[in-house]
Amino acid sequence: MHMHSIGQTITSNLGHSPRRYIEAMARDHVLVKVDFTNAFNAIHREDMLYSVYNRIPELYAFCKSAYGQASILHFGGYTVLSQEGAQKGDRSARCYSATLYTRRCHLCKPN
Image 1 (cartoon, rainbow, N blue to C red):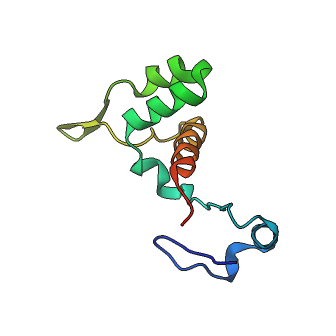
Image 2: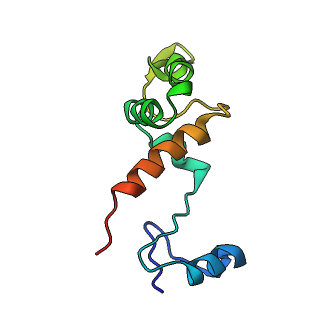
């Protein structure tokens, strides 16, 4: 078993259940741990919409209504167009993000 991490070191705080799963899984499988704290900010909305359209077409119209156009943010006298990431407080964002991450994981090939 080999554990690799991108951006941080894997430590003992991974937990017992994931560790047991890793020890028992087939060599051609992978476990991906995503830190959802900042994950939503790193998503391109076009990629998210494409992923939702292909994996959960029933939610596409709803997702597009929220993310099809830039969000307008106001700060003092300034206006900023937000075109990246999920909107704060959107409870569906994890679902949308999961479709994108699942798609990207399927694109990974073992060495």
